[in-house]
Image (cartoon, rainbow, N blue to C red; front, side, top):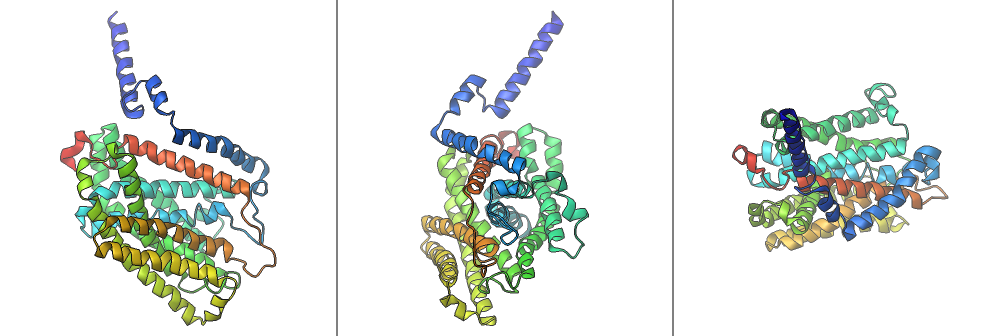
Length: 411
């Protein structure tokens, strides 16, 4: 009898723990009811359509779902998933550097969300890479077999793998708070400074290395985008892209999930947004000047009147200079809403730049160009949907935008 009572007690404790940690304190039946929403229904529809195409890609090969070829090697899986996803995931090293290295403690409420965004972004960049490669067991080959230490791919492979590990380590205090593992949390917090320094080194190198890859194709990349400054341009654009993503992420979470945000953060978020906008404006202006200095240095002005000129002008004026001016106007007028609109323009601008470099302006002189395959876009939408659902799941459960009540004295 006593043993039965003890077993029931343990089972009850386990059920309560699962309910608290995974089901938001609800029963299974009540939790399933909360999942029946229009947004979840739309996400379920996307997954139902897109997941079979991911299976098809592994079953019948890359040609079954993309328009990629030997002449056009990069498609959306890399242009969007890797080359656009990595700069959007620069949030972690930017905010961690600002707080833990530069001592800007006011921005601490944004560090965990930024690190989580960076970790999730890098993780799904690897997912896109796996979909493109098609042989997951060979993913470590660039790191150990296929290339020498002078290869850019060797550099990128090692840095992305190491930085993904660093990002998890930086976010692990939140995981241990969720699991109420105080000793493990203290161990992880003790490694924060070292992880931040290591992360800055890795991020600086691999953000620029993604641009350095295209220095190997001087005749293939259009002259308006090809420049010896590509590594610097990729790095600088990753800075203002990451800052803009932090602004957008906080805006969405604070408006759509206010119950997951520490009430004290609502009083400072506008001021922090203005600070991020000021930093973004400075880096965007430097980037804009460097872009046109590169055009002038190589005397490529004549190409602005060619067929690719309007795309270049739209990218630089419409998605760099315009949001830069909006950032400055918002900061000057102390208007956080204007800064948020600037961020909303900036992120698509960086995506456009990466698509131009890796796809639209690559092999620009070929007589025939293939556009993205419809199945390719469905797979991208599916992976992005899973990424957003994973982020929402974590924010709903872990202390990301709020402090854990059991660890409040340790913060």
